[in-house]
Image (cartoon, rainbow, N blue to C red; front, side, top):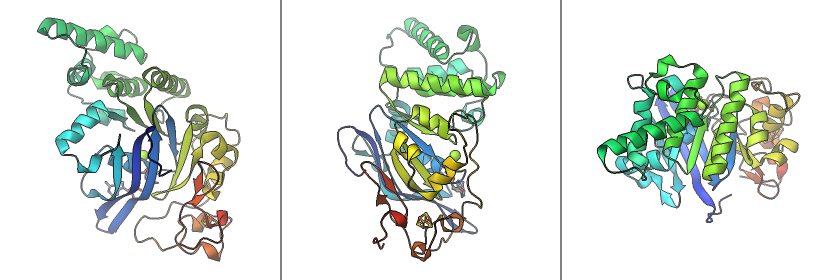
Length: 336
Ligand SMILES: Nc1ncnc2c1ncn2[C@@H]1O[C@H](COP(=O)(O)OP(=O)(O)O)[C@@H](O)[C@H]1O
Ligand code: SF4
Ligand SMILES: [Mg+2]
């Protein structure tokens, strides 16, 4: 997991992101390690409030006050993103890493047409555009039409002139994906791209992301509630709980033989994995408040397998080749 080899595109080590609130310091992301390899799709699952969006918002340099990154390294192609200036970070964000947000309507600019928003990205990042002004404008328009066509927007030439509010929710998600893909990023982070969509559109959007991934050889981080989606589209999966990674490994193995009681709970809440569009309703109880957590397993209060040995901080344990889980039961001799 901590190996940095040529295949590693993104490497996050010991990431801690906190929010200062009146009630205290909320530790939304607490010591997260994650690696994304070139060309792979990594699934990120966990209940709402487990720190998925904040983890990858941190990678994108998009954490705003009262939040801040408190510790950790974020390496992209070996470059430390935390050491970059805001201007350098903007360049990375446009060119190398793109993220689609959970809520397309707030992520798109309501004052610009879809064509204008696509043109902005293409203008900044498409190196193959001609130099002459008229030819350049035409080329940008052609590319914008092509991108909208690619994400399945009918009559793209006409729809380029429309504003975000003139599109349905499903279309807006696809437009956001088109804008994210227009810069041909090396890494696409898709934050719950299908949560708001009906089942048919969900499948289309996911197929689209998979196709473009294969075509461009890009890496994808797919944040989702839906383990069925992970099973179908992701090479590896990382399960988050209460600001920490609690299990990670190859998808088929994690789903086939989960090691952490929380992962088992997530799977148990979906009778058949083929059942799609189903939200996760795992295990009784709630994710703990992420303020002043006691030094014990964070899953303790909800865990069916808990014992006194769980009343200490639990480190990640090796759980087979390429697999880890944060449960003391995997290695009862470990004291951390
Ligand atoms: N702006 C904020 N102010 C205070 N706390 C926040 C803020 N944004 C996120 N958090 C905290 O971070 C936790 C994790 O949030 P998030 O990453 O959005 O979860 P997920 O994407 O897994 O649903 C939330 O439960 C919340 O406590
Ligand atoms: S460490 Fe203990 S409480 Fe935590 S998941 Fe494992 S068995 Fe459950
Ligand atoms: Mg989220």
